[in-house]
Amino acid sequence: MRKTLLLAATTTCSALALTTAQAAEWNLATPYGDASFHTQNTKQFAEDVAAATDGELTINVHSGGSLVEHGEIKSSVRRGTIQAGEIFLSTLSNESPIYEVDTLPGVAGSYEDAYRLWEVTKPVISDLFAQEGLMPLYAVAWPAQGIYTDFELTDPDEFEGLRVRAPNINTQRFIENLGGSPTETEESDIPNAFSTGRVDAMITSSSTGNAMTAWDYVSHYTDANLWLPKNIVFVSRDAYQQLDSETQQALMDAVAQAEERGWEMSREDNEASLQALQDNGITVSQPNDAVADALQSAGDTLYDSWLERADQRAEQVLENYRQQTDNE
Image (cartoon, rainbow, N blue to C red; front, side, top):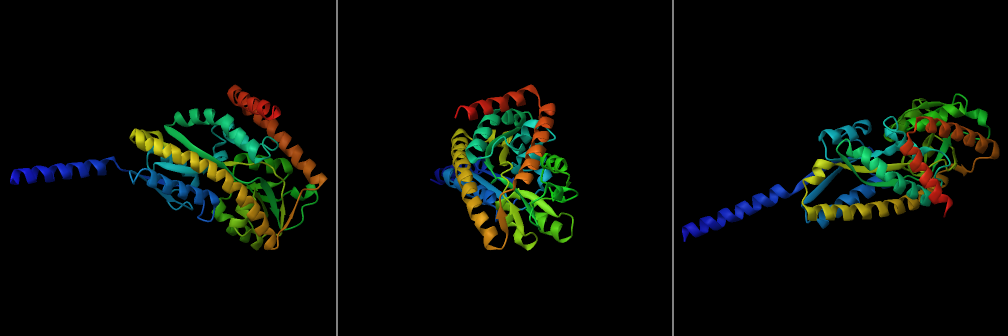
């Protein structure tokens, strides 16, 4: 009888140990604060995964750059220091021109076009990530980018020498084409950059302006609809492959839900943020003809520069996208 009880206890302990060994815990780093709809979507994704896998996979979301700084997130996942991350995709522009295609003015000026562009470029991006042992999960667009200033922007000459916050290389090039002086500043550092005079203006979305209470340091928002850049959430392929097939499927089901939900949240946040900007005293307007022409010219120069750097595959992807768009 005693041997039977000992055997049963040993079997139970072994089963519990196996269950514990199979459970996985991931750390996901994002540079965006809790007020961002991107972070809210990512946290909901983590909750969905935990529920769908009955706790077999737990994803701890570390927001606001609290675990890893933005520029180190991708390399940290690649090294295995953390399992997953979220970044602004176009910050990878120096690695491949395909990463900056969603920051080319005039390429995708609507949510429909931006999502189509993501679908067309995803295979190429997935291949590039795979070469580094990484795996994209989902991507979500920000609202279209506009220009924040502390004056009414009516003359292209007003860009001359203007210190403008630029979150990626392509935006920096765009500002230079306008005659401005780009300054790289993380979202979390925007208020300090304005208060210390490091920047006079910024190119970003209605969402970021709202989240960072832009009315504290600017008075005008020119809703220029420049481009709809994306965040991408990705994981170490090794971490993914260590999951059993059932957990992998549950994860990918949650991925599909997060992507669909995220794009809808972006639309809703854009409308709410534009209203919040106006409610807090910011004048929201469309660019006049002179400013619009200057933006178009700067965008054309940026596109020509991209073509010089793009390889044949990147060019073909963009051509495929344009053909799909033209056939709509």
